[in-house]
Length: 273
Ligand SMILES: C[S@@+](CC[C@H](N)C(=O)[O-])C[C@H]1O[C@@H](n2cnc3c(N)ncnc32)[C@H](O)[C@@H]1O
Image (cartoon, rainbow, N blue to C red):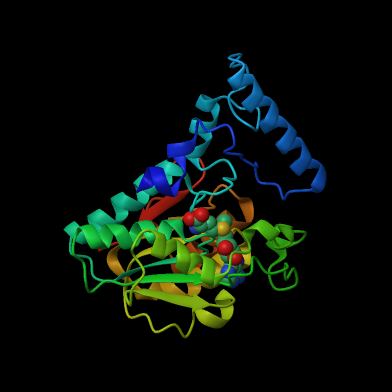
């Protein structure tokens, strides 16, 4: 599952492009096309000088995909295999320790991390646990610097390749045979969907909304539903506005459970029993 979801199974394919956290301009798209054509020709000619279309070696690309540090063209998740390992650890520990509740991800993009959570519940026959899939399905909101000064100047809302429709995410679940009534979609801005979401309890809360606003709104709406012994995963802890939201929330609530680094980018903690 992890290799498919991260598209690592095709990491050595000459046409498996990678775009590192930048939207495609026409110039970049042409550059990528030229690069991949050249590398494909070089491979055919037996030169083997450049292995992949983005001028990275297969090893460099594999390392980036492990850390979720690239922008995969067609993978179903961008979080990388180390953060998928962490997600597996949190879900399996919650199951083993009988921590009650569902899984939610706030900020799903193509849905890969949620698909993975649904697969873990399937493997362990966790039929009472649901997977909540929360997203605008149209990208990030423009910054509201008055309410959330930490987001001033944030450009995430301009990244059109972060806007993935709910229909496409559903299709991705179907590709793995994992779309059913235990997958619940919450469509819209977090501030509108999360406070009234019909969720009873959560075992794992995965935050992946990039901005201060998206992080604070999600954790404020959902933390009280997290069972004791449940996990909070903060995918974007390496981004200062997101880390600020987490610290503001923890300070306000007096949370002192240690924050554990996952891969230099994401972090997590376990709620006290
Ligand atoms: C970095 S992507 C998530 C990556 C994903 N977890 C994965 O496995 O690849 C961020 C997502 O958060 C969503 N998002 C961010 N802020 C939001 C908000 N305030 N309300 C709704 N969706 C939001 C975006 O639409 C986008 O799909």
